[in-house]
Image (cartoon, rainbow, N blue to C red; front, side):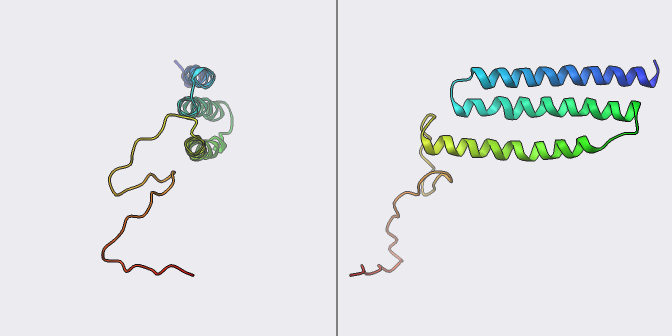
Length: 132
């Protein structure tokens, strides 16, 4: 086997793997029932699928052309923005109550995305007088 044949096989494998991950992510986005479940399909499977497709593009550019590193920048941008976007979508779903209720936080703590509970009296702190 020559180097170009090995590169062609690697490109084909990356394309098939990427296509399968993107297909699974798209199917999960359409078929899952709640917003929190829908987050996992495009952020996990879609990111891996697009990363594999970009890897096929990098292999092709190095094997049959001058080589390109633009795909690494695209992957870095994708790997940074996908989790942040998923976090924002999850926070919106929690605040709107679109998913199951969150469990109670541990004692003396709060969840970072929900309302802060009423302050409990601290015997060491002085009482502030009410304004009139």
